[in-house]
Length: 523
Ligand code: XMP
Image (cartoon, rainbow, N blue to C red; front, side, top):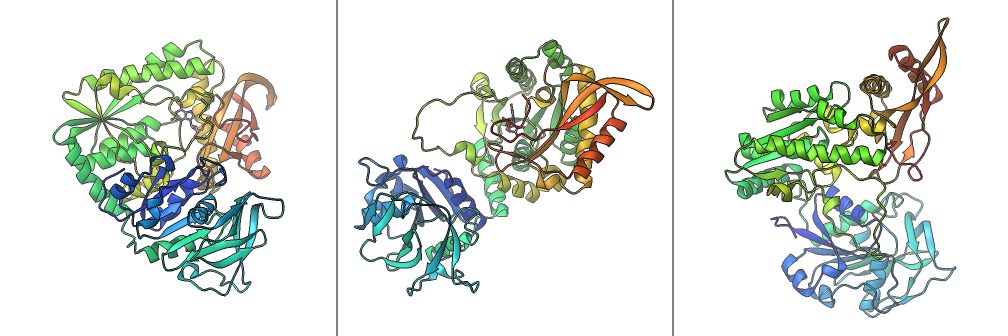
């Protein structure tokens, strides 16, 4: 639980895939909220957290199953508004004396449904059912359904498969819906959250300006006069964390930018230039290209590459950090999605697809304490905070770039020649995307240089050069992705530019694999 002066809303997670979206919608309304798994929400927890309102998330279980997830009964006696969503609705009805029945084909609903109002009016529905059609689109995903509402509740809306799609006990300010107002496919869903938090009395004081001010004070209190070091990667998270900590403690922050020789064209100069010259941060540019490329020489196995880079990164970072006398803290750009404890129903270990490169393990190894000023934020809030701190938009909107850099975009052996060619091709590709105004529509775009050479003809001569693959995907979180549907004109123009402008490439392909089954990076 986090210390905050803001009114807070508690989201009790029953294991829905979309619980984080509830938090997103609330944060958009400037409401401070935290997600906690139902197992952790005890009477003592509730008393300590003192929520101003509570939301029950959806979840995959059935309330009719013995031992299924429940909140403590005391939540209903807090005297604060509660909103139950899907499984959360069923929990509320069941706990308060209604009935839930197992889904049958007639009542289970998955996907889009239309909700229509009843005669009972309530502020919860302000702004709904207004577009003249007399109905609202909502996204349902339920097997079980409420068959009898609890005493004190009224039905405010129904759908063909959910006669109790929206229910309310207006006196107690308990609301329960069968659908998911937080997802995109309930287009007007945000309005329901807006009504709920307004009725709960939230003032909407969770703004980035307030966050910045408070966090600066929290960092000062935590760190005092001690020194902090930060591994600056040039990515948005570590950059915003560094800028914020710098605002709090000035020159007591030193950043280390590890240049492993696997960065994009001009990247090191741009990042170091911006932080050192424009923002006056103390940045050590660790020029360790020889070390990394030397150890990677002749290595073509993806996992071996990743392990080498991860190990060297830690060694190098430690070497530079050791030179900073009196460093007691390590800054990390950990975000809220990394912190939220998820509700696990399977409990089994997941398969390692790729061993990710990060600085995990460093704090223990070096005996450092952590400063993580972004722990409460989602990615887009980090971007908003970055803007608030004066980082340029072009920097904040940058696509993610993986820690192992170009190494994993160069399948097979890495050579300096290939890296050089890859850098140039990537720069042309990104320039094309920006020129066509597509950069912000794409989650990530890059070139991979392939370990094959192909025959071509340029002018009257034969060429025998590398083939490359262009990759561009849309995604919300990098977990799943789809390829971006460029026009053929765009692809043709880009291929021509790359072949004309980049010596060493004579063939361009476009990767149309989604994730899964592919991954975003090639290795
Ligand atoms: P994949 O290739 O697994 O990538 O679909 C998903 C997202 O993660 C990024 N990525 C990494 N980021 N260290 C990072 O910081 C890594 O080792 C790493 N590997 C992949 C990738 O660029 C994409 O955004």
